[in-house]
Amino acid sequence: MGREITLTAADGSGSFTAYLAEPASGTGPGIVVIQEIFGVNQDVRKKADDWAAKGYFALAPDLFWRQEPGVQLTDKTEEEWKKAFALLQGFDVEKGVEDLKITIDALREVHGCTGKIGTIGFCLGGRLAYLCATRTNADANASYYGVTIENMLDEAANITKPLIMHIATEDKFVSKEAQAQIHAALDDHPQITIYDYEGQDHAFTRIGGQHFNQEATDLAHGRTTEFFAEHLK
Image (cartoon, rainbow, N blue to C red; front, side):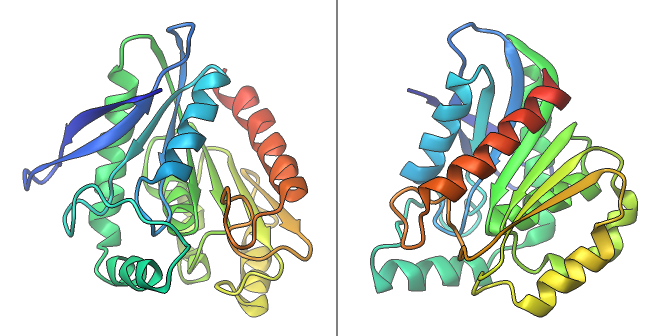
């Protein structure tokens, strides 16, 4: 469906690839699809393809390129989980955000893109989508079960564009205490809308994943689809 493009890091340290899926119409807004800890794998590519089918240019950058370019893991084996967590431990969030800024700028320049750009991220990407809201010029951002956001709540004062957040109430990587902190700090923010998914665990939208739930996925993606249609189209 899509194709790989190459982007150059802002710090001049090298280049990285990104998976680009384009709408059949050849014109539309853009969405940056931000990976989980498993790299730009089949699930991420499928999500990008799905956004392209809805009329968006979707671009998924390889954020682990500084450690190992082209990582594509699944959640099916213990070995892959170990590697994914090792990559997460070695990931530089600050540089990751810089790479996302480059990706957002590059997507705006893609032929046919209107220049309106959203971001959507899952797990690690959910944290980074939140940081795109606080640190980049993206026009709208969607965070799915983002991890360690409770440690970054002071940055919410910088948010000037719409942010939608999806929280799994039984998320084993985001404690009830962390969820309460997020709600306390962000519920009244004029740009932020938070949805809780009762009984759902982490990564409930990961296709084929251990905790995948079709009903909750349809609900969350439906909300995000309306959100992007309102703010990007």
